[in-house]
Image (cartoon, rainbow, N blue to C red; front, side, top):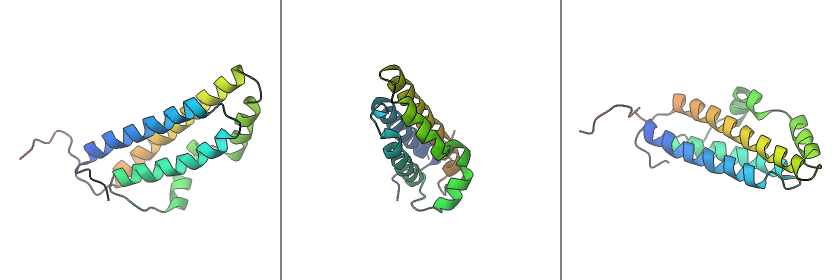
Length: 128
């Protein structure tokens, strides 16, 4: 379970998690096959964000359906790997595209879990 006491604290932690994963995609996306490995990283990122919001387990099928548009398709991975075949420019485009995808997915996941979190809001509340 999360150490966060409020949704605001959980959101700050979740944003750090998403930033770290999207930076990892930016700096490693150029490596051949990285889009497949980073796809697995996306699932781990989703779990970490859920845990930050006090939701340690979730129905992965429901998440996939809810975030299907953000995940993209397997064809996107193929296209990403095809772009990566072009040295330097292709590597840069692929890395940036994977970074943008991880960031967009992370923002959608944060919104999803914030709405479902059992934690109190914590926005604008003064300590007792």
